[in-house]
Image (cartoon, rainbow, N blue to C red; front, side, top):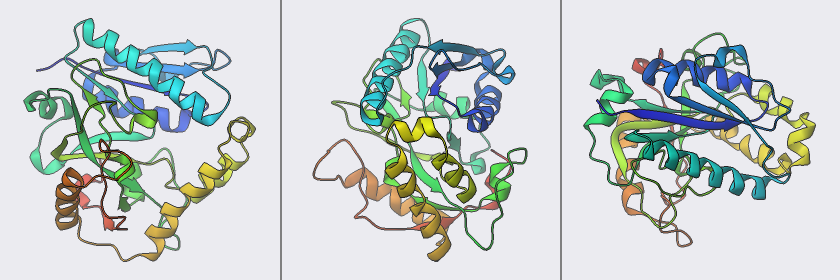
Length: 278
């Protein structure tokens, strides 16, 4: 079995970080989780006990510059972990979960240990929303996938999340600088950051995020909820198979190392087999 670490950086985000620690801790062991808090004014929560959690000087004050600095820092941390004995490093935000399709009956480390990865590996991105009128406000204590059943197949979240050697992530983990990406079969990246309208509205009241220039970004993210609410949900198996093939071949004209899908807006309903995972 390969030795695998997971890392992330957070600020004022205990809600998602708790789930992140629960999920990746169960999959990889808490001792293989590396969590960096953006700002020494943060408090490391009790649920991080057993992980490698560190306070770091705040990186930047504006969103774009801060994001570039954040990924430069995390890329260097991943390089250090790979040079210290890890075979693979998973880099994701605290609201992102790398999932192996339960139909395989394999854990995440089992699956990744079987893959031949020369540079990086990506899961197919699924951006979860809230189907208004059908799905209630999210309850943090209950499994997310028992409460949310719809997601947009999103190229933004088909990210090169797994590194096999020291490389440089672009902002948001969206690409590897100077390298292509490789989408694995039966591997998904579930993004939950904007899957609840009330939580999005609450973020508008977070003065530290607004000061960093997040207002436009947060408004744009409610679009996933509108799509999930208004579009007909398609079959998961057939459309994820299509999306994986399409994103493997198609590229946007401005970035050859990012996936594209002809700007199709495809919403799928998540099969019941996933419901207990997160």
